[in-house]
Structure formats: structure tokens, C-alpha cells
Length: 299
Image (cartoon, rainbow, N blue to C red):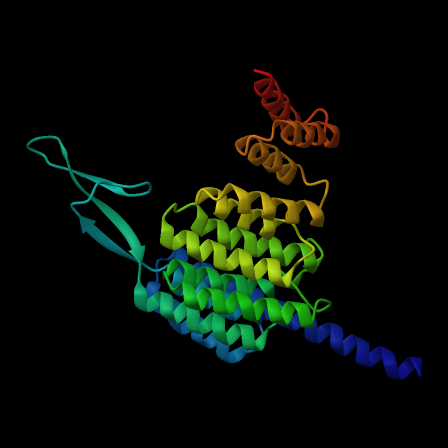
């Protein structure tokens, strides 16, 4: 039996090595074209890569990145923002406008199409799902972004043992921690925009995450943050208490419970939560903040 198995094994190894070599060959050819600034030859090479290596995830990811990173130069009279070039009036020396490089809408749509195809071919690769969600986010298409996140979670919950990340490596954390923390990062993108419409989008992602991952505290804390921003202190405390029930040792939740209890005028309960923070990590930054908060309660 051994004599029959070994040749097959050698063949399998050789086949795998050939696949890696092919991927590296296309990647090196792409780098060469970029170095030579031979832009007209890049798209045909990417098309060939996907055609000749249809089961190579990197062919699809690299192609999508190529289209996503295409930028259009936009000259505007608006004030320059971070990353923009400033346009100065030569006569007055004053700022006259800005030059920015914005996403090419048509190219971004092509990137989304390629990644959507890739999620069907390689559903185990969470980095592809996340890349597609990010692409829709950058295209200001929240409904499509949320839909992709929902599909990603559905697949992840059905096949937790198959999930992979960048370059096909295992997830850096267990799926029931890794996935809800990814959802949290997508939600925070909208929370940081600080406007009512995006606050609602933040709440939608957080609510979905809380429903799907009831044993992870982040989403419950996020929902509490939404109600805190909207000024509903009672609901803020309710959701923080839910987050605490999920993870009694989470220091951020403990600190937030102290702060909301203080806002509600419940100093004795606030003191209890701050003391819990100090007990959880006596020498950490959270403990220093809790000590400062306790000192203010005494005033």
C-alpha cells in the first residue's frame, strides 16, 4: 500500500507547489508592470490570472484591489481636507481650493462585482466578505454593506470550522469573538460621523450583532452608546447592564456603568462600579480613570 500512496502524495505536493509558483509568477509580473508604469497591460494580465487560475483567491482579491484603488483627480474650490493638495491663488497667496483623488465610481462597482463573485467561489474567506462590505461602505451604499455583513454572519455561524482569513490562514481568534468584533468596527465607522442618519446605521449594525452574538459584550455596549448620544440615560444603563451580564469583567463596560450611574445621580452605585474597575486591573489606565472619577464623587 505504501508504494501506491507515496507517488500520489508526491503528485499532490508537486501540484500544490505549482499552484503557489503560478500565483507568485502573476504577482511578480504585476509588480513588474507597475514598476514600468505599463498601466495599459495591467488589466489584461489580471483578466488572464483569473481565467487561468479561477480557483486562486488572490487572483480575485488582487483584481478587486486594482479597480478599488483607481482614483480620479478632482479640482474643487472647497477647502482642502486631510490628504488633499492645496490650490493657492498666485496673486493673493490665499487658499483658492483643493485637489483630491476620489474613488472612480465605475471602477469601484467593478471591484464590488469581483468580490461578490469571490464570496461565492471562496465563502470560507472572511477577508473577502469584509473587503466587499468595506467597498460598499466606501461607495456610500449602506444597504448593500449591511446585506453582505448579514450573509457573512450566516455563513460563519453555519461553518465556523471552515473559516479562514488573509492568505487562507486560520482566524486569529475564535469565530464567536472575531466576527462580532468585525461587526463592531463597521458600526463604529458610522458612529464617528456624528450625525443622526449615520447614528441610525450604527444602531442597525449593533442591534444585528447583539442578536447574532448574544455572548459578546461589544454590541450591547454599542447600543448603550447610541442611547447615550441620544440623551436617553435610562436606556443607556439598561443596555450596559446587559453588556455586564454577558461579560462581568469587561472594564470598559464597568467604567461606562459608573459614568451613567453618576449621571443618573446614583453616586453609591457609581462608586461600586468604579471600585470594580480598580479591582479588575489595579495598575492599568482604566484604574487611574476610575480613581479620578471616585475623587470627583467625593466633592
